[in-house]
Length: 166
Image (cartoon, rainbow, N blue to C red; front, top):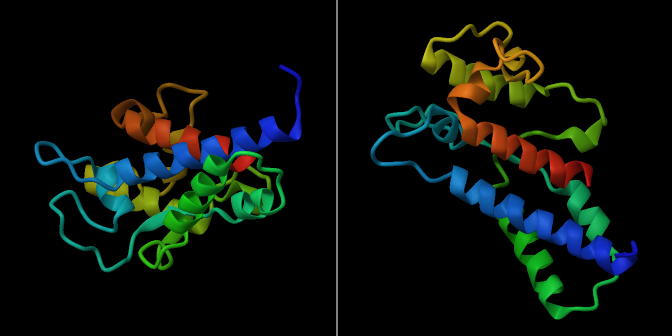
């Protein structure tokens, strides 16, 4: 397959759809064994009590700017692009603190919101809070306890990374 503008459009928009579906799934609380990672994404503790923060969400500023002038030859892609933007720019998502915002500086460093999110998770599971972002390291299996104990976080982080960097 030769690279072309149409293929780029499909790749970017399909990644946006996958990210929106992943975000929607992560915001569902399990009834049998709720995940701390999913609960804190909604600004709640594992019991479902609100923590006094609105929660954490994703930024789609790069997705919006990339797809604003992209060539779309299929109406389904226009509908999918609009659905992704409607989901992430909805009133429910606006007050959320944005995590995984790699497009802002192109450096793989955690933002204040991401550190806050990880510290909230670590407090609930009694993990060390001081360097919570280091618990997501994947180069050393001993330190990546968040990825080992919460595989949904690793998958969600990878989906978000692929959307932001594509």
